[in-house]
Length: 259
Image (cartoon, rainbow, N blue to C red):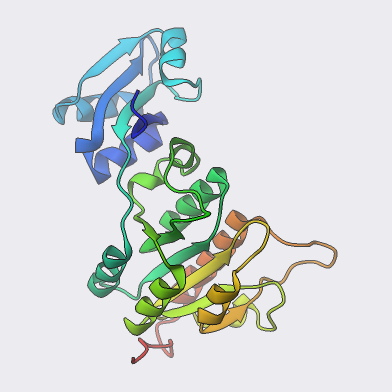
């Protein structure tokens, strides 16, 4: 197997890729003898898309895909290419609604990145942005941890994160960073307009230059004696606070910044 392809496991992941871009699916496996109406529907869709489908016994399938967590269906696919800074600006400029962007400043655990991608997709975010250096990129583990959402959620890798943030600020996006020592609460932040939510790395938090580039900083209130939240959990809290605000009211939102 090439390093640039891997298996999508389970109906959710296969369906997500079929809807996002079926041309990336190279082949599919279905467990022989296992009855599942949803898998049957996906099987027909795969065949209609011209994708080769093979049936095999459970033990053989487990060995082939390297896991027993496939729920009777798996698809081998080409991993998508990460986007770059120019792509991010294009996405912002073409957005039909106030963009919501998740920025991860140095997350290195692929399970955390996958969980963040999944939360970003569920929140309707425009993209997830990560630096190219000292951070995990798109890997098979990330794809699996995202429950297939890596097929839908654009992942942007930038050479210089602070520069990328400055560029989206000039394009009208307000940038807020999560920092445990900040005075303001995420629940007091205005996330109804074009917004980027910046989360720091698992151990060190936001880097100093990233921190200085943010328009404002806020914290997530947590109980005394608890040091911090896992970055993927914190990202979910912040993203869905934005979702709550955007659904709760349509008036008085912070607008697109000028210059």
